[in-house]
Length: 174
Image (cartoon, rainbow, N blue to C red; front, side, top):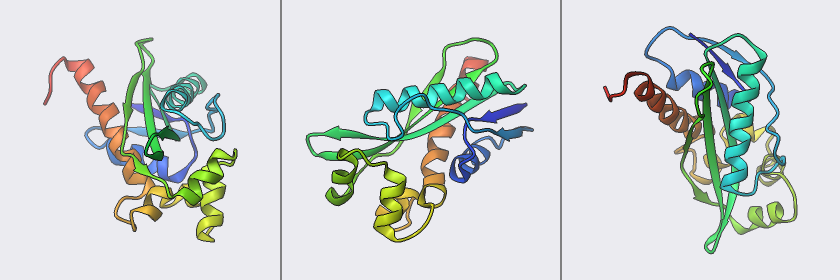
């Protein structure tokens, strides 16, 4: 089965490969537009970005599954939370499968920069004085002292997607 991943981000590619382990899979990663702001600022916008990436990916190459993973933020009365969503689409024109993952409160220094219109990736690079945090440990890796990195965070979401896909295919749990 061929899975088209709607991103060339290394953490997202690794997440898909870690989740799809029971069976024979072929993977292809393509740059897929999210169709939303560079910095999604709500669950709704982040979900739409994930669906758009998955749909676009599957439409660009021959495959059975398209996966879109999108990171964003969600404002709450407690502060700005990091959020992450995923979508799985199939070649059978079914409704997208959607799943969300872990959330953590961002430090106010980072949250303020995002509220000013900046994107999390570059803000984190500046905050940590490192390059390309988004393809490595991600903000979640920095703010959890390495306990959970970005690939692990998205692996959880991708496993939720795959599990729902399997349930949809068989109508039962394993």
